Each structure stands twice: as structure tokens, then as C-alpha cells.
Length: 174
Image (cartoon, rainbow, N blue to C red; front, top):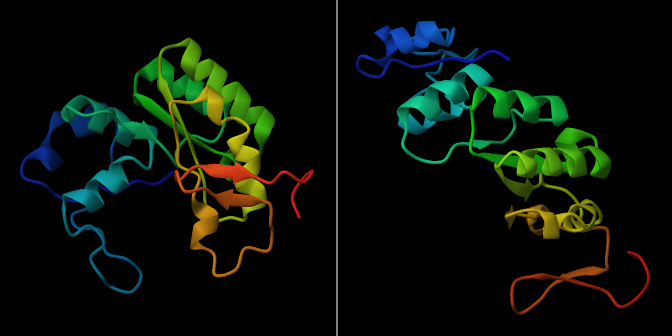
């Protein structure tokens, strides 16, 4: 994955960037001619888009680092654990090929002391209900992507008064 780091003080000249092979482009200009990295949050986003970036952030920021879009399978979890590049793994069914791989990712991460989270994309409640089957195994679940849809074509999953998903009493989803 390509990663860009915008110039922040002396960071761009730091040996840490060389240590982790982080390419520096100051500032990154997109195809439309606009500057992409405009503040520290843009820079952190770029950093977290690769393992090298996560290593950099983990070393320099005293806060938990979440591996999100950069981890898509068991192999990625193993590499993150081995390199100590993140403290939390965010697993998305749509990114990791489904329930079986997600389950294996959760088991591996938890067995080696990482916190785990289930996340989602903007997707129907069918996919959300599938991910919810794994929610007892994780520390956090952020499964609200279907709430962003103008019209969810699937029925059978309702948000209760307690802001938790409630499954229908009917068999399956409609």
C-alpha cells in the first residue's frame, strides 16, 4: 500500500521515517491539484494506511492504535501482533471475506492479548446481523452501517430503546 506523510516540524527529517521506510511527500498533491494532508489528522490517516505507518504512530503517540482498514485477514493480524504495530484490531466482515476468517482473526488477536472490535461498512442489516453473531467474542462492536442507508432492503433487525440490536422473533431475516 502506498502511504504519504506530510511535513510536520522535524518529523519529515527524522530517522524514524527512514527506520520504517516511510516515504515522505511534502505536501501530497492529489490528481486535482489539491493538497491532501492539511492537518495532523490527515497525516495520521495516511500513517495508519500501512504497517510502516502504524509502527511509526505506535512509537510516537501515547494512545492505543487501532488497525482498521489495513488488516484484512489472519496473516495481517499475525504481522501486526509480531511487529507490535497496533493495540486493537478492528475486523470488518466485508474486508476479511466473511465469518470464518473474522472468527479466526478474533481468536488469534485475543489469544495474544490484543483487544478486538467488530466494525462495518455502509451495508444492509443482513451483513450487520451476520457480524453481530461474533459480537460476544469482541471488546467493542460498532455495527451501525445499515443506519446510514436511505432504505435498508432487509427487515428483521431493529434498534431497541437501549440502542442495542434486537433480532426479530420470526425465523431468519425478511
